[in-house]
Image (cartoon, rainbow, N blue to C red; front, side):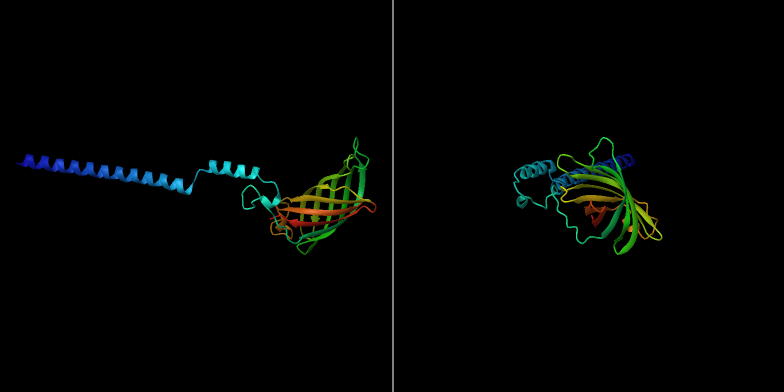
Length: 213
């Protein structure tokens, strides 16, 4: 009799374990199916979307037709200039094997950035294209206040000069050389778009720049 009871309890225990295992496996299976279904809803077929978007862009014939909400196109509003700078050329040195109107140059001046006054000095190259008279420039400017300093590299291309006046469009990339918490630390690792007007007859230039956020 005791043997029969023991066998009965053993069989019941085994059956319970088997049922629990089966239930767990079923739960796992249902969870996997649900996750796959959700992934198809939340993460659709992006490859197909890219193809459709690319095909749509190929059909664009004017600015008015561009969907600026598309990730492939963006527009920017730069707002009010945050930097104004006035400089005078301090030296010019002709570049060998280049157009006669191409130079290594230095300059210095002063300006304001976000209402903060600074002095500046810079070095760069001024390369004239003999074919159309356009100018390419690249160099480094150091901005200096009473207690801080920072460097920015600049690069620009001009429209065709007219009557000794050159109009540039370019970018400034500020490095992280300002001291921590310094007057100019807000410029660390920032980018600005700028325009300047250069008077070649007088050797001076005026620059205005917008922070590119």
